[in-house]
Length: 385
Image (cartoon, rainbow, N blue to C red; front, side):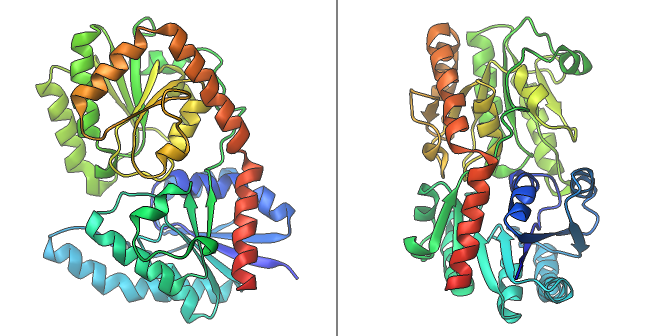
């Protein structure tokens, strides 16, 4: 008898969890798992990507919890909460689902829906893009509603008091396509499209614009690096949801105040392509996040043998061995970060050694097969519980 799972993706833009669902789909099917993916109605980017990969998906109106002091926003959150739960319950029934996988327990709707339908539930806690005061709630409702938990790496669980016991959690790394994310030289076509000078250093990051990425620190670090290494260019590749438009405009204003001219010194790229072309131009991948699990984009940069410098938050230390395959830095310290990056870029031998070690780590730990095996383990544990 085949097991049918439902991956619930409530974020309406392409991100790491969506990438994971796409990458492991064929492998799960090879083990006799039937897979359905639920995405928000109107998430055109996700629809396109799932369609192009011939991966099964369905749509429903899905709301998300929001951290906002705006009374109207919170009114809509609570007004739509049980409607979303009901919509997910309908999908579970219509598709004869056995196991519900919640791709982000910051939104408990799917876990509640699964429990109300009497199904096994696997809850994924994927990062720290959640205020500290909310994390105990996530730990609590994960323990309450989920049979098994999943986290990227092992360090993330300590940030969520009340989370499931260790023997009920399965750790995994997001899967990376080693062939796509292999350095083959700088992509001059991409550089020309956006006006980036391939003869000058480039420091960049990949990730949708949101507070957890702390691009404010990224921009401040870049401004100081420009003074230390004149001529350096900076690149952020990431989409901008409507809810983050104000943050995006503030970032551009901050760059301008720090003498980083948009489309001359700093480039904001918003496209639907994979990140390999953008990463190929980066002499250093700089992740300044204050909240991460294990970033898929970070692993992609490591796979492309880029120098990686990342803040020591969440599960990042499960991936980066400080000074060996990358460098860990303290969050929100733009002076220290800029000094570290500037000094490293002047030491080609050290950069080359760390970069090769970075790809070796990815090859050994982040295969699609390894990620699919972690999912299979979680599914087996849920069904046995």
